[in-house]
Image (tube, rainbow, N blue to C red; front, side, top):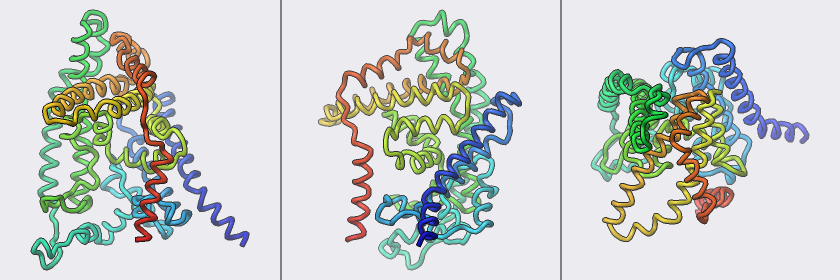
Length: 403
């Protein structure tokens, strides 16, 4: 009996040990890369692949914990679906961490999805969720990734061309120029900041879309069928460019940018911490990205903006839903506000250092920080408590099991 208690305690804590060891080692490597070996930001080194491996190690640790160390009725629907109920072999573990498709640039994926792909069950598992007889099929079709791969390769080509032209024309270093900081008026600074931040995106579009295409070309990434009956190959997609560029809220933008990392943060932090999930998730994101001060300026600013945007939405959005005209006005206004807020928030992420970040924010009069603080302080907040969200999720799982 005592042995059983010890095993249960070990299973219940091993995910925490894995998390802190992996994140601690990654942080040490970030520090040594920047402050000991003085690698530049554009230098290709080990830290990129290590960030992906850290995500995979912690993802698997938590999913094994869900499968072996928790009761099924305590899991959310997604946690139950992804729980790993048998200890992976050493070969499975290494294959998951170091497979050639994602070892360099990711994206992170779930262990059960990867094993299903290796065993040849990946596409059939997704297709079985659809009633094909009603659609006139007598047997399961074999979805081909060719169309998705060609489309994504075309997107990478466009992104590369934009990087070689737009990004080179409007580098982030322009934000520290004397003209921008001291001579341009506030409106010109707003517009120019937006243009520079737009110009910084193509390199991310290129890398993430190419990584997605590589996985699809290997046959991994099939996610099912959309409402029009088209095959979807976006299980591992890291971004949705259309939704990013048309986002009408800070949350919508973030949800469609670096999607797999956001999913990782949700699964290992946001869903599991008892208090302050938004704050702790942003802090973990900054720590995972590295130790450049600009990362922390961005994510701490992001906490303020997220809370302020949520408060504004809860207080005013319902007034604009009575007609299509009002909804169009609301969407236009929130689109512009979202794009400007994102540009302001992520600028330190690109600038990296403290001095240019402070110089930029001083030239912008810290306007978004001030507005966000005023909104949080003076408007009533109506968030749904994290614990309440969690209990509702568990209740829905229990109800489903009972039904």
